[in-house]
Image (cartoon, rainbow, N blue to C red; front, side, top):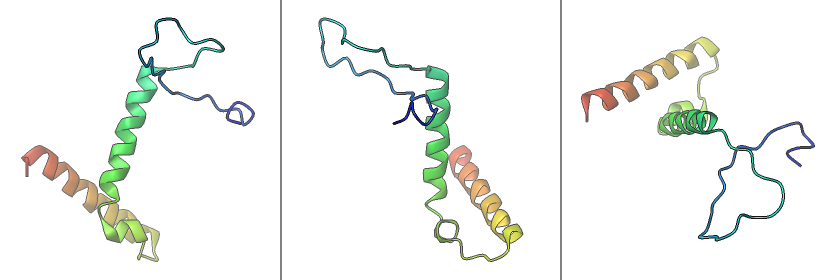
Length: 83
């Protein structure tokens, strides 16, 4: 289904203590794309901790972006100041 949609999966093969390689088509894996995706997913998880952003109470888009800016500022402060 993924190939029919024109997408390319990026899943690392799990060797599971195999002695011989698995038959069939080899999986496509790009480590750079995988590390970037993990970084993005982690950022989304941090953003989900802020209830106001998760439920989107703001009607105006500008105000919502301001709340996102405040959330990212708090995330960076916590990360770099170590609390």
